[in-house]
Length: 290
Image (cartoon, rainbow, N blue to C red; front, side, top):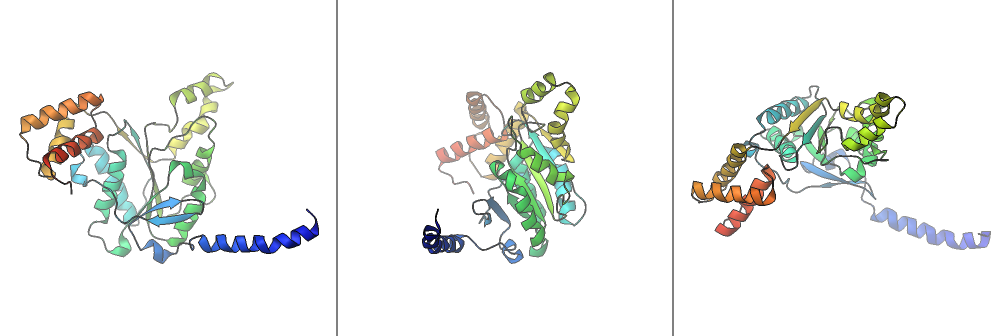
């Protein structure tokens, strides 16, 4: 490009840059962090969008995960009180209440606390993990104590994003800010497919060292909570609790039969399946779910 062309283009490029800057939202401040109890991290441009109302289930309705609930609630309460707390990995079968528990615990811990002592819940999507350092710098500066939440976290072969996450959780120079704790859910205990780990082990000169880097990511979570498929009694207890809570008038035997048929058609018993049945039942009864 010759100098005359560059000279002509410079004003145009300057106007475009100014327009893009005006479109970008202003940097988030600590005052903005106090504007809501939950946020979603967005990229391009980087920003936190406030969530008007968190979609959550009352913690008392989460059945069959008493131990997991107790441990996560205790860990989160300590964190809210300014005490040391662990990052948590909730792993296991789909639809068993992993993400529901995180949101329910967040609501339970905040209940009764003053605004200044309430935890923020900040969700980051799996595809945005590489932007995690930028988000953590923002949260560190905001100073509000926050649960950073990533749902359905997992990594595929040749995916190097896990390295950034591992460094942030424990190993990096900056590390995790004192005012942030990281909670993740995954269907995989080690956040990656078993065959990926086995393939690395089979093709390596030193099998143990070959998989150590990837497996060690899950070791960065001090609290591991496993979630397993529900038995019939627990599934029915969840259905009954939902029906009672939402005042759905139906004979107990009919409720049990329909809920069982619903789970059979889906080949799965889980809290998610139970909730889907309750939504269907409420619709047929003409009852809104509050």
